[in-house]
Length: 294
Length: 294
Image (cartoon, rainbow over all chains, first blue to last red; front, side, top):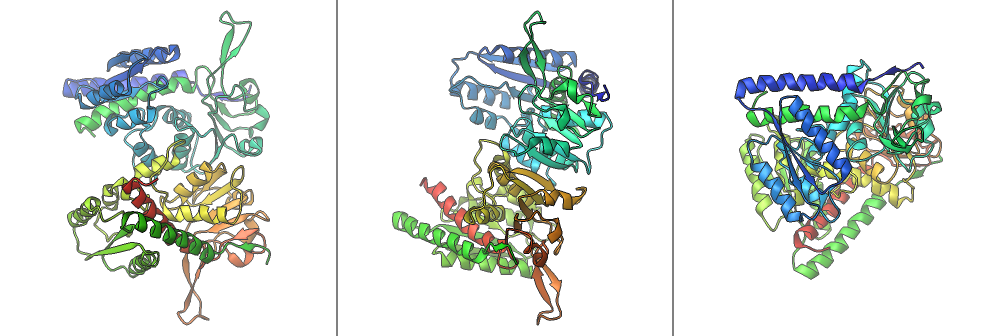
């Protein structure tokens, strides 16, 4: 085992502690706490568990947390009405609509409705546009991509001038993380299902971000020795040795990769923990924006 | 000389002819012609010449063209008032503010003011966000990047699955052209001033888009034999053999590149001619959007 582990637990805790300290200061200054409203429509078990952990993280940081639950039968108009009410509520600083929404609801229309200065998920096209454009500043950086960069920076890994490969081009991870790496002066290649000779692309990379949702797809032998690997994937695979009959693995074959890479994030215990931490950071930022605090 | 020339004159003429045909149809259908309003602030000679050629191209296509000239001393409020009036004018379908604006004016604020459905330059962050996001559709594709893709497509050059290198990361060319190539399923690497070993990056590319504004910077020996080269650069360099004492060259060393590439755009006579042509396409599109014509 050669690679240094990038420990999501330690880094996420540091980010959460900083958000808690900032929250305490803001409370002392304004008498109010940054507050996140989460909208959960339907009863998807994974979504329920995410929403619970987001609420708990807010409370642990001393922040306010409100969860609005709508039944799976909620209409588009009902969901939109709720988002409008939250936009208008001065006690709500950040709004997060837990995805995916039940079938039949227009996700894009709901997300586009969230006030830009409460869009702590950072998925509004206006926000993504400002993220990818030179010299523009988005209101919020989407949480998981921000977490990837935070892990690199806090591990002392240089980004400027490095060759980075992003595997995956989703709106939630691939597109924004590529923009963030490019803004930090990396030379970024975004790979996807139509990419020819992916192993050769990965082999050139000093920094690899894997976000494709395929268990252990990126192999150790694809990696350049000493590179940094950020594994965004969280995949459940069968494992008869576990009581649950399954275990979680990333998009990278960890056991192989750890022998070649210089740095690597584990799964679980890696990027997954950063998403909630960065959500707290964004909610603090939203509070400051709305209160005109620099 | 081995490379096939991608002739901007022929392709731009085809695009302009199509816009003229579309305009004639729309006139017959609605009694109105798609109309572009251009705002020119100050007396920059290059800007004046661009504005003149845009106006002439509109007229040649049977489209309406209105040019608003404001003095270099115009205030931010005056420029914004004009844009607001054009937003509100139903006879104006597309609005183009010629850049750069004189110093002291806030370009970003002016551009963000243009109605999304009249933003024929496509530079609004909301538009760029929709361009880079998967599954979203921008109202308009910025003209020069759209022209680059049009040249590839009309020359029968396949993009899907190819390796593309974009040299330059400007908001006007690099960022949107990289997004368009990626949307067309190329694997895109965006290079810039902090990129290490640019020649090696270019050597891997099936498609090279050069948009850095440095005369003849990309050398022939950097190219992969048979690749397609789209040269966006227009640089004036001294040339004692010319009456004007200068000539135009691209960002690619043409004489060398033409011996290695499979396809190449000349400068002048290449991408430069496409920008105005795509502006006509976008103005037709704006007219249709505003008239609810599919």
